[in-house]
Amino acid sequence: MVYRLIVRPFLRFLDSERTHGVSIKIGAGLASTMVGQKMLGSLYGTPSLPTEAFGMSFRHPVGLAAGMDKKCEALSLWPSVGFAWTEGGGVTYHAQDGNPKPRMFRSDSDNALINRMGFNNPGAVSIRKTLITTMESGGWPTTPLAVNVGCSKVAMGDARPSKDYIATMQQLWDLADMFVINVSSPNTAGLRELAEPDILDTLLREINEFKISQKDKKPILYKISPDESNDAIRLMVEIAIRNGIDGFVAVNTTVSRPKPTSTRSRRAFSEIGGLSGRPLHPRSLEVIRNVYNQVGSEYPIVGVGGIDSAESAWDAITNGATLLQIYSALVFSGPAVVKRIIRGLQKKMKQSGIENIQDAVGIHSNT
Ligand SMILES: Cc1cc2nc3c(=O)[nH]c(=O)nc-3n(C[C@H](O)[C@H](O)[C@H](O)COP(=O)(O)O)c2cc1C
Image: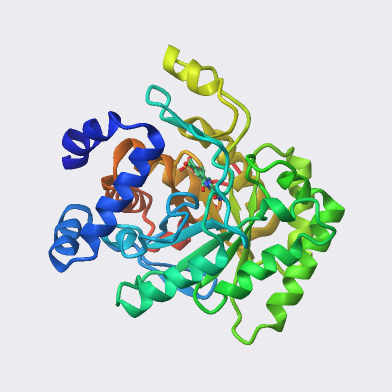
């Protein structure tokens, strides 16, 4: 309510990327004080809907998707506004500016975003420092933290791109609870080529050798592009499992475009970049369902793409997602969307006679 009536109209006057930066700074500032925490908790506190995945407990399934907190600078904010877990990043080993601005566009009538950020982030060494400062200042979240790992632009085309991924994980291994391997962002030239079968096989094998060599065991997930064919995704999933991947994130943004419903959408959709938000949901569901039917419950799936209501969240879960993430819905509806989703899921479970949210995973995957 507060967000929709006051904060969102104000932020609309700023361009999309500044809006983003300003919102995170305001939120992080608030969440760093006791009073702010209390206020955010009373506005956005979510009921619990416990679930388990990757050997960890989650208060409920909904987490923050990668790309919102690229610098991992607001880790105490996300649990305060209702998220049960956070994916920080994408982080690359080398600091990089990303693509020239403007590089983020919105279509309010289609509830969609187009972005071509290009892994703008301060690099793994700097992010390690930020995380350590957060820990030392007592602002470490009580909820699980995943880190999204991308490939540095300067390492694209290297004979062994795994070295760049591993260098980032080495920096952050003791701090994060799990890692997401990202070869699926459409905004770094050549990145998606790393998902070609032979290259992917070597990349994931070398990453797995690194994982096995670590004293602390941490899950590593693989994030899927919605733009690959179903057959290609099937093969990727096979390769990933053969190389020790623990689960999947479905899906990243898409380079395809739906039919725009307004002139502003037409303009936004004509921009180069990845589309997220509501129009991505049908393809996201399809990928979740296919992967679930391929791997079953042994390899948990994080469902992401256009989740913005209890209905879309329920569809993702019943088609095979154990955990969920949102990005675009946070931009269009504000943080209260998390609470609405969890309350709605509780209702759906009641209607279906399901007591534990985990029992709903995949129940519609064959229909
Ligand atoms: C501005 C922006 C930046 C993103 N950055 C990343 C990223 O660094 N790594 C990644 O794997 N996904 C990134 N994503 C994709 C999201 O994590 C998510 O997969 C996608 O937005 C679909 O979810 P949604 O429809 O809820 O937004 C980004 C998305 C947006 C909109």
